[in-house]
Amino acid sequence: MFKLRTIITLSVLFILGWTGLNMYHYFFDKNIPELILTGIKNDDHYAGDISCIVHGSHSYKVGKISVFLDETPLIYNFSIGKQSFEHPFSINTRALTYGKHTLGIKLVDGTYQKNICEKIYTFFVDNIPLQAAFTHQESEIKAFQGRTLHVQFQTSKLLKEGKVTIFSEDFLCFPEAKNSTIYEAFIPVDCEQAPNEYLFQVNCVDNVDNVITLESKVQVVPFPFKHQKLHVSDKKIEEEKIAGASQKLLDEKLKNYVDLSPHQKLWHGPFVIPFDATGIISEFGTVRTSSLRGIYIHKGIDFLGQVRGLVWAPQDGIIIEKDRYAFSGNTVVIDHGCGVFSLMFHLDSFHPDIEIGQKIKKGNPVGKMGMTGFANGYHLHWEMRINNISVDPMEWTKNIW
Figure 1 (tube, rainbow, N blue to C red):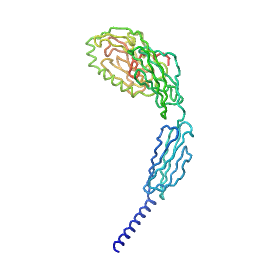
Figure 2: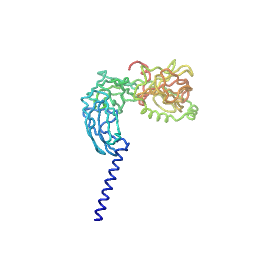
Figure 3: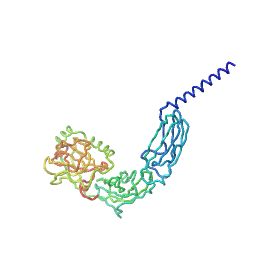
Figure 4: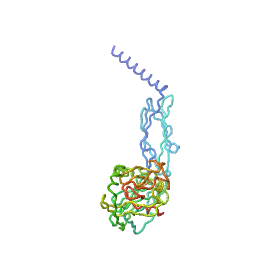
């Protein structure tokens, strides 16, 4: 009998405690419900049917759920009445317009307070078939060694990614202008690229991972580069090694800068020669012979002009390097976007207004022409690189793209 009374007493106490706790939560719990949505991520793109699940919980219980698509109810005040739940639903994106949409989810708990959790998700619908074609389909594409191959194509919509595969490398494609569906890639043809016919592929991936591939070929044509002997005194070389950092350091920096280059064109129109030149003493691609480096290819253009004359930016961009190196002397590098860089070597001094990270406009001064580094006379060395491969800068001064 005693045991029975004890059990009854404990049961009553448990029921009263449980009831009291529930009453407390019902009247005084101010915690808002927890809400997690799976199936849709903010600012992601979708096609076809989207399977979604709302996961919700509350220390008392979740009372009701509402789901709104573009402010129109899909589910409205559906009763839950549980501490935790999962509620699946689907969205047929084929019934929605191309572009941006919103999904709103509202949970109301079951307390007297009616605490609310509400979240808005933005997503994009893309059910348009992916199509692509070259803007200029020439029967035979040719490119000289050391020049730039320009690949341009148009798509039916904006892409998540476009790339050209050629010379066993991948080159990213970029919109011709903001929100344009005309894409282009600037492919550097190395001076030492063997003359031959090369196939290339353009791989287009849209925002819902549809893929389409274009194929073409290019004939790399040999260019008759000149030859030149160069002499820099041993004394000059030793002085510059002390005054400047290792050229290897600059090369390593430029490799890293390629990955950081903006995925858009920062320039507009043709480039300009960054100096009031009166002549050229060494052309791009000249095969040089020197006592220091043996036989090597000169991958820029050396301009003559007024000693310590003003040097300016050949196009809009961002200053990414401003320092002194043993070989190139006082050096300025401008990133024009899309992995396209301008390098100016042997400056006598830097312009006081330029700093690394600063945006610069075409024609703005960067320094003065000099003979720092391994230079045997006053001149400006202007070099252009795409993905850290040097190309003829003079090609970029023509309005051909």
